[in-house]
Length: 255
Image 1: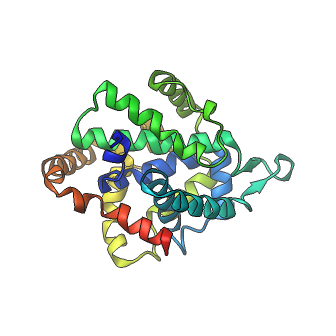
Image 2: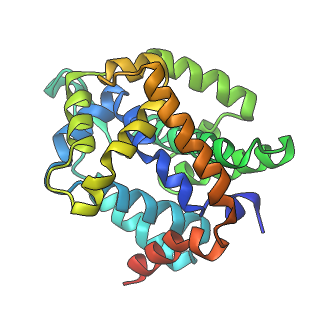
């Protein structure tokens, strides 16, 4: 079994979903496209469902599963375009540079969460996971050569991209809809304080502040306590339970 197949289906990685989405929309073109074509207020779980189904199908699904989710994603991306002349920020969901950014945020967030909970990967395992994560971009239109050649090249590129991000009014509005979803199910609303805490903790400090998160020593201690509990308990949870989202989303794809 590949390292990615071994760790990529762990449900704890979903805890980084808020961080990944906020990094994505802090790219001005992605933020403008999401603001114009997504509705987090009335359908707060749609993007999460779509992203997880796509990721799990690429890593764990059959060829048929991958064709199904690729077709659905392409159909959803079709309307997400705006020529530069039509507004301040041109964008297209088929832009390979934007697909690279989305895939990169998913990879970087997943590795960060995994290592916070389970400890650092060995260099060999980390290299293998990095190479395999390219599939999340190449499964659609991103050329393989867009994926930086190794982890060192990725880190240099990714950190430079982080420095160029900005939280536009569009991105801020989307983030507030995402993290204060009044139309969400009761169970989700009950967990939103923890989601906001984890999302804020995982963001780079500058972006955390620009997204309006208040961060203090008290909040850092709360996050540290939560992380300590997860580190102590989560690895003891049976793998079959920790991988339930994989089976659930593959079932959704096949249905």
